[in-house]
Length: 343
View 1: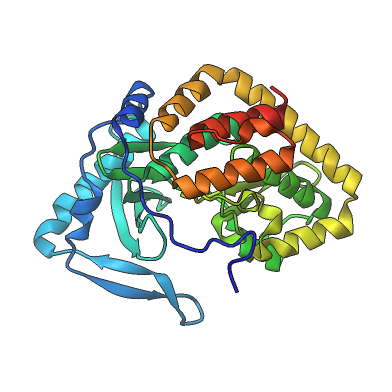
View 2 (view 1 turned 90 degrees about the horizontal axis):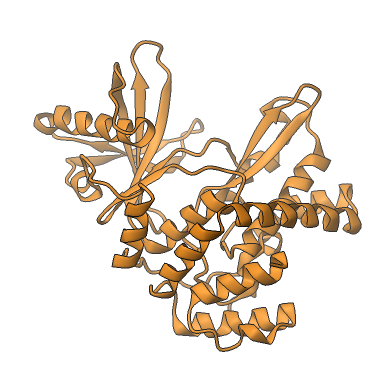
């Protein structure tokens, strides 16, 4: 039996950042020299398994450094954090509390925990292998979503800020435990809008553990924002359902909640609202989006098989023959946004 219509069959390859994308990133202050790189952290002294509160081994391991290299590595990691969040301006009293590594997934990230020694407040950031697909996904998220994304790139290294929120699969198991008065209608509304954003800009693999729920306590009740934390599957796959979070079995609890609390007509209204907001964001950043898509057209970000299949499936889905025969994923994404948003 073959893969289902919304199952990802093979691991996506990492695509290098080409000259065109590097120029784009430099022009928009995303590409700059870094004090430490991903490969530097691979030269560690060992890894130690991490366990959760129930004693089960997690996907993360603690990185052990050689004593002779620890001070220098920690200083460079603190400098990198200052570059990410303060344009390199000195932030006093920062120290590295821990370095973790996750071998699972495409980017195999290092997670750096930065501690403010004055008040014991801490923050995280991530150092990953640079992948053109992920960079395109991050940039499109920054331009077209309601969220701002902070990241920098240097050669084969990608550095990202931490995105705050509760993992989607954890949140939906017991929404009430995270405080506030749980409002299922508002959560369903946000899932519909999130579904619309992903499909419009062709961001795939948005299973519940690849997004987080950020809950904001309003003066009378809770508001929700669903945010992607994984951008590797930016317009790579050939099946159009890959880009619709509603079809993943991991997201069925969100869909079931929606079926109980909002009507089809209400869901359509929320989708229309989000498309209106997307149109406004697109218009505000139109020149930059066009520049990015032109660069993408010169890059290899998928296979010819996936490109041809996606163009055919979107042609059928939208009833738009213009998708057929498009030469690159950038052109497909460009037409997808124009058709979906009525541009």
